[in-house]
Each structure stands twice: as C-alpha cells, then as structure tokens.
Image (cartoon, rainbow, N blue to C red; front, top):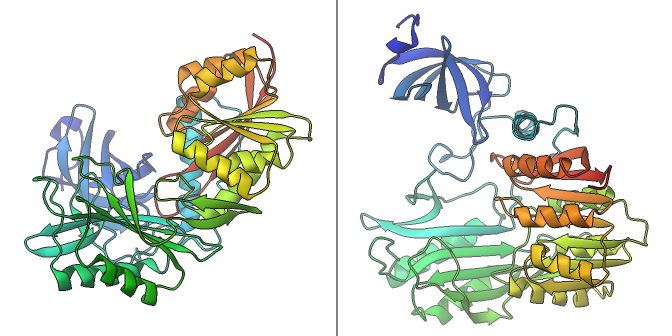
Length: 462
C-alpha cells in the first residue's frame, strides 16, 4: 500500500485506502486519499474502504470499490440480485433511514451552493412506511444478445439490458405479466428490435397500474403496424392477469430513445385505466403523465395545497398542469384555477378529468405558460397564487419574469431537480420573494431522485 504524501503519486490501477466523506447528487461516494478527491461507486460516508483507481484527472479521480474496511452504520446488503448491474436503483446498499438523510442533504446542499440560501427552513425528507412495489408505471426494454432474450432495465449510462425476473420497486403483478410475454415471444419466435440496425419488431413493454382501482394496462411497443399472434397473447393476458383493463399495441418506427410512438391500437379493453389521488379520479392513457408513486403523490399534493394557503376566494394559476392532477387538488379551496399546459393531449385529458370529477371552477388552457399568463393578466386576471411543477430543466426564465411581474402573494414550486430548483428560487428571491419553507418528498425510494415542494411569499413589489 502506498502512503500518500503527494497527490502526484496517485496512479491509475493502484489500490488505496480511502476515507468516504460524502455522496454526490447521483449517489457516488466521495472519498479522500490524503487531500485528493476520489469518486467511488458504492462507498458511503463515514466508511473506510479499499479502492482501485480507474481514472486520474487534475483535481480528482475515480475508483472501483474493492473492500469495505470500516462500514457505515447505514450500510445494508442489497436485496436485489442485479443491483450492481441494473441502473434502476442506486441506493439499495444504504438503509432507508440513510437514504432519507441523503435526500434531505442534497436539497440543502443545492439550495446553499447554487441558491445561496443558508437560513431557509428545510424539513426532513418525507418517506414511505413500506418503500417497495411503489411504482405504478414500468417501461421494460426488450433486446436480444447472442441469441438470448432479455427483458428488464438498462445498465447505468448505457443501453445494455439487464435481464430482470423480479423487480421489487415495480407493481407486484408486473413480474408475472413479463413472464407471460417472455414465453409468448419465445414460443412464437417473435423478432426483437435492434437499435443498431433499426430492424426487428418488439421494442418495449409498458405496464401501468391503478393502485387504488387495481386496473392494469399493458402496452407492447413495436417497430411495425401489427404483431403476429396478437389475439392469442391478448386472450392469454385476459385470462391470466387479474385486473387487466386495456391491452394496447403502440407503434414506434423511429430511431429514437423515446419509448412510445403516437399511434395506439387497442387490442383489448378501452385504451385506458383509472386511478385515484385523494378523492379525485383520473383517466390515464398510454401517453398520459401521471406521478409514478401514488402514495407519496397524495402527500406531495396535500403539502402543495397547504403551502398555497387558500381560503376560498383566490385565483390560482397552475403552470405545467399536465393532466390536471394538481389543479383539481387546488380547486377544493380556490375560487378559480387556471391550468396551463404546452402538450395539447394533456390539456384534453385535464378537461376530461375535470368533467369526470364534476369540478367546475377549473379552466385548462393550451400553450406556454410564459405566453398564456401575460395574456390572462392583460384580460384582468391576476393570480393570488401560482403553482409551478416544471420538468427537470426547471422553469423557463421568461416564465419566472412573468411570475415576478404578476407578483402573486404566494408561489408554490414543485421540483424533481434540486439544482434547477435552487437556481430558480434564487431568481425569484432577487425579485421580491422569500423562500419560507422547503419540504423534500421521497417519491423514488432506493434511487437518488427526490421531489421537493417549496413555499415562497412576496415581501416587496419590484
């Protein structure tokens, strides 16, 4: 073993003892060799470990974990047999308590490092009582390697498929469904899509589950217009899958990483399932955006409703409203809610969901929020509360400018990316808003992802 005196002696392929002190936002252990930083997948803070250096750069290096010498109190044995290969989960070697601590910390670190917030109230991450089998949607890539069929999930940062027989974070019925389809493909020698050549038929299998209704949708994504023996497969699934409501063929002929194409052929059922969040019922089609974890979604929306501070007389704008889930929650205590969404089909779904729940004080508008909101303002419609739930890239700066100009009393910001959240909160804080409270919510146990809901209040007009 080399005693580190000078970082210049750190060499690739050499083994060193590291002291792990932190985790990165994507779950890599941060270790120190002397004063030199090394990133090691699988290492946990407060551990001493042995690692082999795989890459050396000017200011840091990467290493491969070889041995845990002194384990963290949070270290556990992963329950999934393919955890080290599959890219779906990153934190199964950390206890659930440790994961919640980690997710609270990455939100705090992002707000301090990027946003400059050092005295904001940041609550501990809200977690699940039973953090398994929580996903209501699964997308399984299908591949063939050396003549062997693989149905599972991609390895980290690649499109190599890890064959998965049993996934502990997906719906409980999924494993049996995949087994049925796997046998069908083998028995009938159905061709499998090849990303390199663009040839072959079956690309993905998507399964959506209504956790409260028990309804199941199965969608086979194909590189074609039809699939042989499809009626036989439909009948097998109908008789063997309890709760099956819809079986769909989706056509995607493009060379793309996007899973679903735009054309659906209903083979069995009516092409959708229904589920509930709180008292509201939602109709979910193959392309609908619907939060992955229904248990934690309800808690997230209840917190957003609490932060909105509605008393019954307010006008609320829900930017990035999707299929209207948050808008309907807000409608319970608002005078009027305007939901704005750039995806036209989502707006149609939102209107249908409002009708499904007999909610009359919501109006859904198609377009960019940064374009629609100024038009509403010109028409004399001023929001008392604005709720935003943007994609990972965060809010468009033009939308943030629009929010600042409209100056609602409260802004409720829901985010799936602590970094862009911190950036946008900093922007709004420079335009007269104070970040009052931040609540991380663990929507994705065993992964590095964390959802966050924040309350901002207006403290001055600018």
